[in-house]
Length: 286
Image (cartoon, rainbow, N blue to C red; front, side):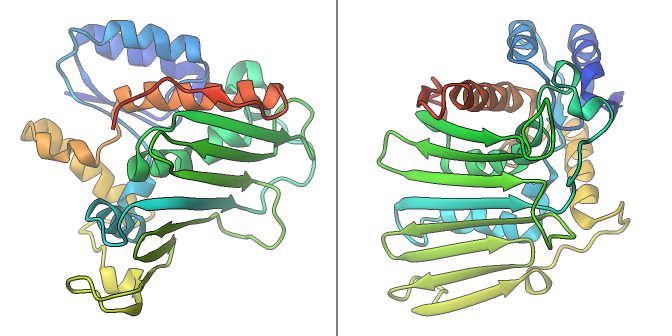
């Protein structure tokens, strides 16, 4: 009825293609692909695919980041002018060993394996950028990047940046933060809370500061697979198959979105190889 693909990235392509050829619904852990050629090949196979797919970008199901999406979609702070994103953890402070640090197998370093999470949130919040420029650094690794700073430009005058590394001191747990400035205030979102600042009252939200913690937002589940958002992600995927629920489209990151995300990742690596030269992404979807 459904296939869950939770194997190393180098094995994803053949299994994804098998599921598409057999018209079987599948869930694949992120990132779906290691190269742009793989994603382009899968794109050509999707025309007759009628089943459901999902890629494991579980941060869409973290209660704070889900609330941030709601506030931005409801235009609570008006048109967004600028955003800043960071994603840090204390993970690598010497050369890493294994397939993850071999770009021919893994596809790259911190960008494709860690930063992809916040890239997905940025796409979910703001749509797809027009141009990208990026700089990457190898601090401890020889063959893959340990740090990336990425600039985003959009056709509607929105701009922003993301800074990400797995070699940040004093970050025992992965910490993710997105801050955005708009016409009527600002929104700051991290793993623990949402902070909203408004210059005037807007519906249920009053002028000044509103803070919503993950406890306030709630995210309880019947069965907890490591964290509530994994359980909710799995539940939504199964229900989308059982009920053929198209209303979940706005939350579920399907294989088509991963094809577009891979294009952004490819532009990041291309720009970094050219010392940050802007690259046109070529995605106009909202």
